[in-house]
Amino acid sequence: LLLGLGGTLWQAQLAQTEAAKATAVTDFLVGMLAAAAPTEEGRDVRVAALLDRAAADLDSSFADQPLVEADLRATLGVVYTELGLYDEATTLLERALALLRQAHGPQHPQAIEPQSRLGRLAVLQGAYAYADSLLTDALQATRHAPGDAARANLYSNLGYARYVLGDYAGSEEAHREA
Image (tube, rainbow, N blue to C red; front, side, top):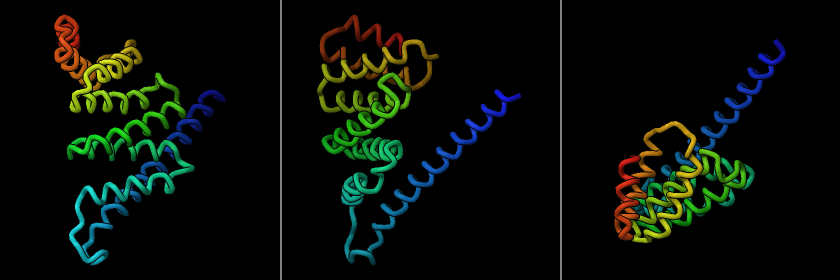
């Protein structure tokens, strides 16, 4: 009975933490998008300008909430990647990865996601050896996890990086795993 109560209290605390994190993320994103109102600045606001401002605000806005900061950095990193702004994406994803590794350790699933995104970004930038290293490390950390779409995506990106590097056998193996 006491163990059941303890488990329930732990889950309630976890749910409260996640709810607070979601609220902080939502408030930050709404604030970022509200800055696009033409009446605020009297000009046309570009997406990249909003993202730049939001990224600059992360250091001061979430200094006491590293997990929220990491989630937002990872999210903005994905958006920058999709816009083709790879240098900005790299900076954000590397910091998100560092924050998550510091909080959870390098093998934690939450730390693997931005590492996977960095690997994909390295592929897009043509840094195939770096991509191979990042993706191989991420796959090693998920070796005993059940298969899922994220793991298949890791293998697919790794296969492409190895193909471009001329490692055709390694590429085929990775694509078969995907």
